[in-house]
Image (cartoon, rainbow, N blue to C red; front, side, top):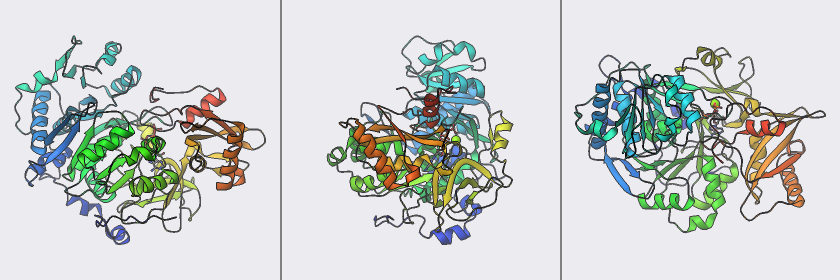
Length: 573
Ligand code: ATP
Ligand code: MG
């Protein structure tokens, strides 16, 4: 099945083949403002330059609080607020390259702080507000953070670890009403009298912009370093993949504590001068749909886990709303099951465009671009300027339909600059000469579409057949009783490994021997005799990272009674 998008609007990238053949990143650079000597600042590109391009009074941020209160900030207001904060931080002693962490819910101060830190040439450390003390301690100690910007509620999580944070000089607290911690400064006091004179450190393209820890799906989160020069990749990819246009109302549901929220919730849309929606509240099908209708969201960037939850909430929840402002939907973070795309067509009348990238890659690299037909289950094709391939262990490129390692030719602008204080880990990404190794396995079809199979470590070897967990999970999801599925390989003396599935049933469906048998037959019919789960266990939930990804390594560890390893990324049950 192929899905062709229906929207009457011409996509920004109209001719994929032509652009792929001719695009050079030097062309992208023309859309970015550099300073005289090739220096740059990502925050200047995101905010300041729009003040002189007729967007000073355009709304940059529609901030919707937990209780539905809407506040608007123009590009001028964000610039002024960020300049004040940057001047105040400078006075506090924050210098170029210092690590300043932002530990806030999705409120305006998070966005303003990120821009202010980048303006100073200091390094932004985004932190997800649901992190507990252990996750915080690991990141703040590893990065030697100097300042953390937080709020009254979240600062409580610092109390028990504060003694261990020897490098942390200041805790800046937004809207503080409780007794102050040692070293605490009020955000409001700090900015009240600070000058709003423009601050903008001109830095080299390789100068660190942000330091972000990976999701921790496969192991201990890694501190990935990205640079100011990334902005050209942010800009071009958002233009092509998210298809952002001047009048769009754009909502990225990812928290800036994850790379999607930092890149595509802040820098990329703002570099394009687009109005961004941020919503402080948690997931709720009703609240999300109401927000889309209220703000007339046109472009929506979300994740498979959220889409599966919307699916679970049912079509009735959709029918209570209009949702007719939406024109383009994209998804990232995990494989997007074909069943979810089919449901999206039914629910929103629009295809959902899957795309692939990683914290390390810094931008979307492979995508179902709006100008190309979607093949449900495929991640799409490499963006112009990106040479992705599937290779064997020696780096030899494989023919179509052969399973191998998903790799990318280094040289795209947003490639990670390093792993924080861990050169050895950084070098591991380049162990196949000439390639950046993603750690994912995939295959390519005859039309150049890439198909995700699994994390290299997750691929199951059963009776000599290699089976990706994603295809088994997707087949299970096509059964009307199934809401979520996580699949692992379980060691077996006869077959090497057998496939074991952990399944969450939809509301109101109860488990029975008959149903389990039916699920096995269903998968066997969909895939192949060797690819069905010999064992199925029904669970009420699956272990997920705080960014919503299924943690198969944990399912496996529990199943085999092995140590669970680093679980700081595990969401609370
Ligand atoms: P860690 O590296 O700490 O184990 P993580 O890999 O989940 O965590 P991220 O950088 O947030 O951290 O996620 C990138 C990974 O997410 C990719 O390597 C891939 O496995 C998965 N992923 C992202 N987008 C897609 C997609 N569209 N289809 C399939 N997988 C995807
Ligand atoms: Mg990873």
